[in-house]
Length: 267
Ligand SMILES: Cc1cc2nc3c(=O)[nH]c(=O)nc-3n(C[C@H](O)[C@H](O)[C@H](O)COP(=O)(O)OP(=O)(O)OC[C@H]3O[C@@H](n4cnc5c(N)ncnc54)[C@H](O)[C@@H]3O)c2cc1C
Ligand code: FES
Image (cartoon, rainbow, N blue to C red; front, side):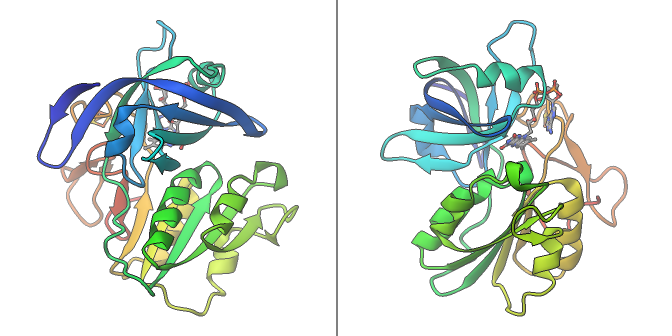
């Protein structure tokens, strides 16, 4: 394992990790388990920057860490095959090696919650994976976890059982083919309880709703996506703008994020 840079807040490593298993858990959605020393450094909500094993693919692909098992030195990623890069990643099988940079970014701040407090987790589609480790760690510290997950339709539903292990799960589908018909907002707007922290990850439309709804909440967090190149804060390919500030106030999703506080970023 090679140390690429040791900054004040992050240690970026590069390692050839070993693929332990890979399987398709829903149409075009794969779960890949990786083994390596880097697992010891991983935190909920961080991502890995994966080199696609193909010489024509120069840019790494950012994928969130879905589950961390420090004891067995394995991490699980769940990703959707979009185009060529992710298609090549999905063809890897047990025993293959994968060049991984990370763990990168600032993950979810779980320290704001203590035992007996309540967390609301909001996930949409392929944004659900990082919530599994988040739920696992919150529940381990005695917090109550309630998840609201939204998917396009029944075939796209993933990680429902995993999240049910850690608390109550509400599920919505856009077309009503499973769970409540509608978006996550359909359920959340009806919840009467107060939450001590909110953690969310999903499509921009969903995050925009969460951002607005919880803008005044002291502990509401959104995990964002952006097109990335270097993935370690140097190239500024991934900037987002701060709300109510001049154009020059940029934040980098890869380095300052991917997690930001609600009310902080301009959508
Ligand atoms: C912080 C972060 C975490 C992510 N976590 C997950 C995850 O857990 N599961 C998952 O399925 N997807 C995740 N994504 C999206 C994933 O990175 C893209 O789907 C993937 O890079 C697409 O690669 P491709 O070669 O198949 O597609 P192409 O469209 O051919 O990719 C071309 C280029 O665009 C970049 N790109 C394309 N889509 C995205 C995107 N949405 N975000 C950033 N760069 C993109 C690629 O990295 C590549 O450099 C995440 C993105 C970010 C930024
Ligand atoms: S991808 Fe280079 S700064 Fe974020």
